[in-house]
Image: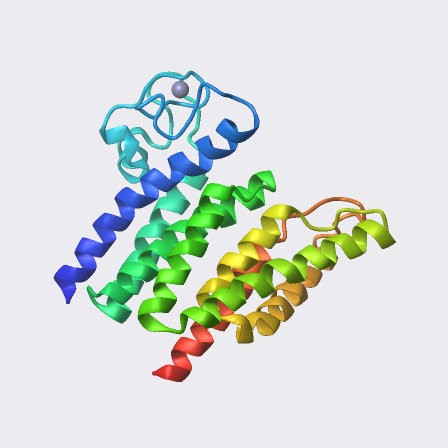
Length: 249
Ligand SMILES: [Zn+2]
């Protein structure tokens, strides 16, 4: 068991390092810079001096220990975000293997976590939910349902998730002439619906809306200021998923 968890932690560290690349590069490749994508340039670089990183520097935990959180070439402080994402990915991966062992089921949950982490952070930072992540999440959700749930449930979940937010979008657009939610949110809820089935969507949306509302009030977001809804959908999903899992145990 200990060995399995150590393997999961190491795997999580490397995946977390890759997720940092996804989080940094995917929005750039979509919005601004056509020369950057997930595989080009091959090596990660310092965002400030563009100096390519050595193999050891690629893993933020090592570079933090060795270089005290600064770029070796230009001395720019490396954002804590890289370290947090890497550590979180390792922790969550270890937790999944601790709960489900090395099984097909934990394989699905690892993929789920590794897609939700970049979606959460990219939406929070850029208010963007890239299709490549939401759609992958949906297809993997269908395969998961085939194995461990009910495919029909998942397909209806995806449809209900998409159509609910789609109708809400048009309602606001026609009635208030405002775009309250984005197309990315429809696809995200479709993907999450695929994973939990249509019956759980009301709870998910209720949780997400309550959290979103609390955040809206506490953070004093201005009325017309856009804020990302994706992270709230993801937290709502986790509540529902963890609740169903714990009631099964
Ligand atoms: Zn630098």
